[in-house]
Image (cartoon, rainbow over all chains, first blue to last red; front, side, top):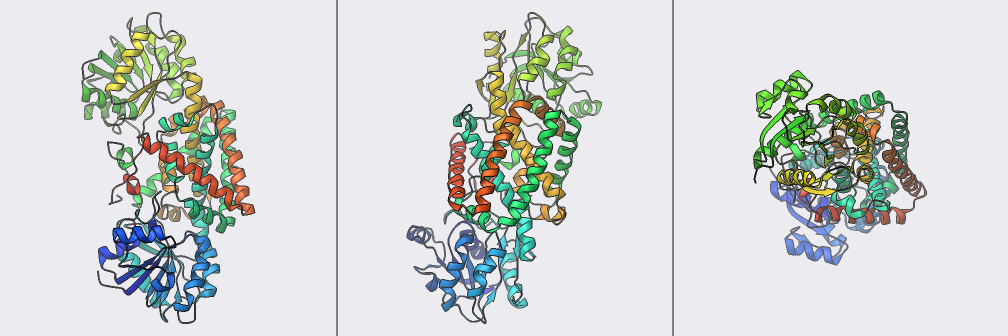
Length: 306
Length: 306
């Protein structure tokens, strides 16, 4: 793979940024990658593990001279970071981000983008429940989707270049407008996360079942929920606050359906339950066929269950 | 491991029974294992893949002379199967089951257990989203819990022998009474399954987001829900119909909490969301420490994402 940018700056050094760094290095996609994190401890860790070619003590220092700047911070602080780095952005550079919500990031960031700098929001649909500079790995984006969400002024050549970077990191790339992105993600990610958080909270609250029972006996089912509900609290708080409308719409639909199934249980309507469960099983088959998950026994967890 | 039973009969040849067979063989826990499935196709498959030492065309034939009979059929038909085999049960034999609900199985099966036969309900907390005779594997129960739910008349020696069998198949074994079992499972398994089924159904219904978008973009979050929601429809219909009260109680609690979090989103109460998500993250750590899941990156799915 050939080099796509001379210099890339990663602002915020968590799971996504650290995975981007290793993926960029794997394929030789950039000459130099600089990095900045607000916390000194994170910067120290990054230096210790060799994350980024150069770790800088200010965001401005990391951004100076960069051809691509990627904002990898929680959605709620994107605007403040954009304001901070705006004065030092190189003419012709591209600013992108990896936030899980797009409309609100565009509203927060776009006003600070100077004339002559390209702004192309993006969202890689990949993650684990781990966070921080040590959680990244080069393969995170392999065969996962990255959604580019260009704004009206986004330059086609700059878009093509950013697409090439994501493809070089292993992703499949699609383009989508911001509102549709936010609705699709509310369905596939945001509502499921809130539901998982809720169920894990209920289990923790229940007085007649101890936490240790819940933990010991969490076979398939609850175990998967806890994994989802272990994701970074700051990131997810910001997601729900900034994708409020779409998330609340989907949760409303969810509650409606849940009440219908609860009613079927209460009235003993086995046929309705069976039909519903048969339909949802087919969707699973579609996801495996689309290559977005493994069909391995025990979910590919391996036989030792560490 | 030494032989624990001379002859074991497995009635119903799905995921659990087929895994039991391979686990029994792995450790040499039984002299002969007979098997019966209602469907001729399943019996043919079992014979073809060498599942069971002897596949029988009737449940009675499989049960005759067995020291241990394990009912591995959906919870809703346990009573009918018990009635069918009752006349040929060997004096001193043990009848057990692997149903996900215990109170209703006891009510359905116990009346048919003849004098001199031991009845010891059980529930291995292990599974995958696959079903059928070809889905089993010897390692399914390794380091998973199996809950024994003895009835009042259960004989201590017979319990100890059944415990030894499950331990020989790799399980950790605990004992619990039926009502508590049904409540614990409502929390850790039954309610999460209904919730996952519901969310997958909502996604499928939504007109503005296509199924193919949902499938393509189902990164972590929805993807885990579809795996849960791909479980066997017959089994889960019966679970909800027979563990109605506990499931509805937990779903009621769940709805209450979900409404509180929805309200926090609507009013922009970031602190409440952050505190909630921080609490649920700690529960996840407990599950990993308890050895019930892997902490591997990308959930141990491996790097290729087939």
